[in-house]
Length: 603
Image 1: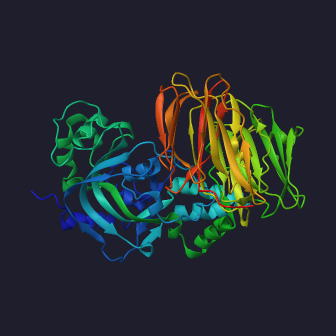
Image 2: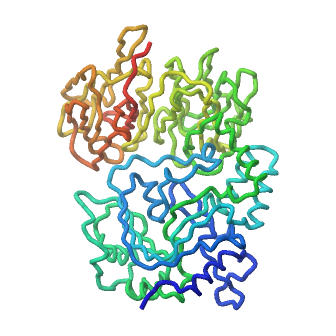
Image 3: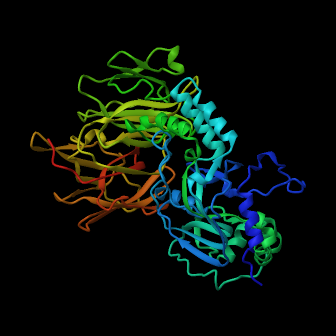
């Protein structure tokens, strides 16, 4: 028997898209209940969550719109290989990867933390049961009145920061994006990182295991023939039909029930082919106000926030575009308590909490023509422990806050652009979140695009090799000294960086990282030789083993093979190992690898 939706049911579905159901009962057993497709709801995106369907209808289809639903039938299997965990979350839900979606007006302001570099192969397998395809245009859609009212209320906030934060709440409630072209039906999905030496060799079209066991995730994985393949995975997902039927009676019963046309209200959006920002729904006047509010992002750039992931409490761009004269700090040697920026026109941003009633602990002063190009922040999930700056003159500040202790480093750099200000959040006793704000109208040295990854965790002494680069644009690793051992952790690590200064090649050698005794070896790199791969082994607070490989195929191995393995390569094949950060005591305890574009001849 055909499971293709008949014309009468298809018409019912189309009519359900043309009404605002907010005034109807939510109880399906109520005689006045009206089915509502999740196609009419917006979707939000978080830094560590899948695309999330909001609970409220945000639009309906305008009357007299050309009939745009096509019935279909069929079951297909999709096997996709996302490049990182962020792309994997989107693909798992049937959405395009973030890079394929249109920009939202607020993207430059509310940037999410970047996904870490992938250290495995992501794969997503989805069984898709197609029922309808739908394709609409923005002007076919009508926003519901409560969404318009919420947007208007947000724009009535007295300050731009207040308006932005109020709109952020609106988008969290109503969604950030809406689908325009989608597939409606049912699906099973499992997504994860393949285990070592694993491949997805099974095929859902040929493999149907017996229905047994109450574990939903195991049942989905068996039916997708991927059991035991993933070493890390997202929760397996059912869309459409009745998931409780799957858990109680197995795949066959769920599938037979889900494809029945009478159960069309359970069918969901299982694949999105095209989407737009939710603000495209707004009347032109409101949409222009929102766009103008966030257009300041064209004058500034914002790095992802670190620390506590929560709405920002203060905005580093609130005083406009101007030059920094001095940054003041309040800290106790363990965490940053507060921060304040003094500009050359004597205006001041901050302090915001502790500093309003207490004396300044430290200050970082800039002279005429100087500006900050690089910022290093050490943070936990809810605290900023330390901060450090580098100027366009390559001068590096001291570290303000903890010199040792908890906190992982984040490197902020916008290709030589000047720091404008610092956004963040604060309590009465400490800074909990920071976000760097950059000027796009001032740029220093030739840009070296960077990317970083941290291995291990520790509470010992912090080191940062940036202060030994000399000229950041032309700096490169010239020589590496290390403890040559096969039965002890990494120690005796000392790196020499070379750079150009006044036409001459100059060298700077770092202190020894890891003071434990042992035989020392020395490795000199050729002039056009760069490290392009770093792998090794580590435990929670020990870097046991390192193996470095250059673009010429030369390798050096040192340390003890123990603990968890890691394998790091630059995200861009043209990048090289630029410099390192980390923590050390008797041996190396954590390591942050910073990749950058090859050096330029400068100064």
